[in-house]
Image (tube, rainbow over all chains, first blue to last red; front, top):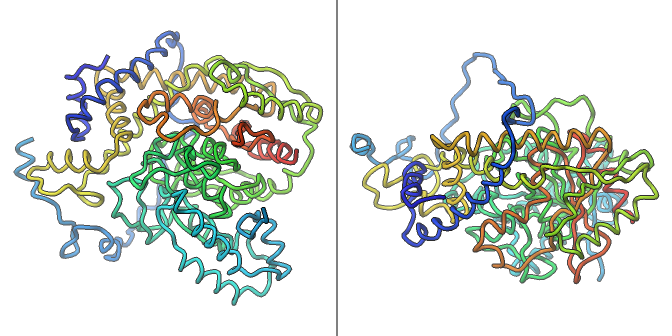
Amino acid sequence: MLEQKELERLIRLTKIGLSETELELFGSQLAKIVDYFQNLKSLSLSNVEPTSHVVEITCPRRPDQKNPSPDNTLLAKMPWVKFDQFFVPIILDALSEE
Amino acid sequence: MTRELCDLSIIELRNLLEKRKVSFSDITNSVVKRINEKEKTINGYISLFIEQAQELAQKLDKEVKDFNNLSILCGIPIAIKDNILVKDALITCASKILSNFIAPYDATVIRRLKENGAIIIGKTNLDEFAMGSSSEMSFYGAVSNPHNPELVAGGSSGGSAAVVAYGGAICALGSDTGGSVRQPASFCGVVGLKPTYGRVSRFGLVAFASSLDQIGQIARTVKDCAILLSVVGGWDSADSTSVKLPEAADWWIKAIESDINDIKIGIPKEYFVSGLDPDVGKAVTNMIKAITPHCKEVKEVSLPHTQYAISAYYLINMAEASSNLARYDAVKYGYRAKDCKTLRELYEKSRGEGFGEEVKRRIILGAYALSKGYYEEYYGTAQKVRTLIRNDFDNVFKEVSVLITPTSPTCAFRKGEKITDPLKMYLSDIYTVPASLAGLPAISIPCKDRVQGLPVGLQIIGKPFDEKTVLRVAAWLERL
């Protein structure tokens, strides 16, 4: 059910680098799991509404007021912080490459 | 074997404290001593806060003069699953990708525990990001079962269940997405409660499958679970899925001591079929026989879509996990792979090296279920099946007050037995995932009979927000 080409597409989508061994292992394991999921196809579901959540979800809103930004102690706990800012790899060249 | 302070319940410890027979420090030191004896074999903790715990206990010894108006959890050593944020402590989720991450704030449940004077003794081991049923899939090594270290502790809250079982904490918090509190409680011979979805705030619980995750309570008695829930539960403005309820929380503790002669019990026939270990079935059936003369009615009921629960559950679980775990991009925090030249390389190498096998499998399959061309076929279908499973429960709860089932088809299995076959591992969740899909409260308690010396879990499932009845039936069975 899950061809190699499909697996490669999913790896691109999820941005997870897999080793050759993992690729081989996952190919068969994931196919077996997807095969198992086919049991749902025996059900007639045309008149059934989907459930995405079991409780009613409301969107709480706080008053539109200024809140103080987190102080620098929060940043201090993060790795790769320089000059009170996140230090990230160069991404602009990489983005154009995408 | 002599029971030490670390083996006692919250109620027993409070009685001793009030009579000045023991100090807060005596309790904490007893727990620490047991941790030192057992932890090397069990590996239930990822982080321990022994010094801070002992300091807090000493402070309580000096400051507490009067026990009136003092929370019953004050001075009680509690373990926390390492996917719940405790401010300024490591929060790893048992993953390499978060192995350097310090929590910037307290989860709501932690804030409430601290306000009640509870002593947080450490953060417990789990399957990475709570994805697993054995607690073998941890970056920090597998958790061993306290009854036999060659067996798994169950998962994913295996660390929390194991440390409560061996006396390394008086009680613990875990998280239950599809059985992750109930199944390890069953394997380790303790009580594990998954409250109704919405009962306990998820603010500060690291998101895995957001429509299913719920913080659960693990203890050695039903009453201790009720006490813990009464403190950590309740509406929270920081979690839009937490539910405002009119009742006060402490009524459970009294209510659970009452009779059960008004209770109608349903036994779902789909839970007693092939695949269930006959000895486990017998242990559960013996408990049902014992309760039958004391309740109003025991009858067989049907939940006809149970056989579809695993597929629906895992599709929803994986889809939500795939979306939630997209945040681990190695840009702001977490593990970052070395020597990456492009952004794509940074993402792929960091996520490839930072996540373990099971997490990768679920993210990839979740992306598959959500991707163009497959969404309706998989994720959409699973959501509709979730409706059918909810309807099954709604129908039976018109006739009965609670359902009794086994918690797991087997007792604790051997380490390594299922780890190479993920589907086999998923199938072991068959009795716990239906209640999760429907968001119902459910508890696992140990049966009176054991199988080859190992504990067997009995599950009680209740109506939404009816923890009171679930706990009442559980407490009655516990007294057998």
